Amino acid sequence: MFEIRFIRRMIRRRMTPIDQTVAEKWKRRLAIAYGVLAWNLFGVIVYNCYDGKRDWPLYYGLKSEEEAQVTNREYFARHLGREGATVRLLSVKNWRVHEDEEYVLKKSEGGANILDLEKADLSGKDLPPIISKTRNDQ
Image (cartoon, rainbow, N blue to C red):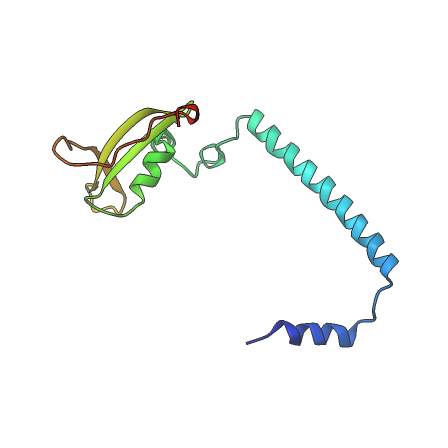
């Protein structure tokens, strides 16, 4: 394998050293160029969000309307890839549990690898408790 020392020796053999003041001047110039570029890209992102392109895969047709309706927590729960697993989806607002749903992952019809969420009927099973205290209650 190539090692960093090999590349370093090759560069040092073929290049002459740069004066420290010149190196600092170019470092400052590159830092300013980087800052201007980052600021402009930030402006482009803000403009696209304002213009309605926040969900760019949906805007450019890479994602269907059905996929756009799926929440992030359901999306990641489906892609766990663990058939028969129990998934507990929590929604927290103001340091309290706002919504608590339990799902069982099952294979979708048609043989697709994506798993469907089915509401769980887990009345007899022991599940870990949820801490719903606020920070001030502790």
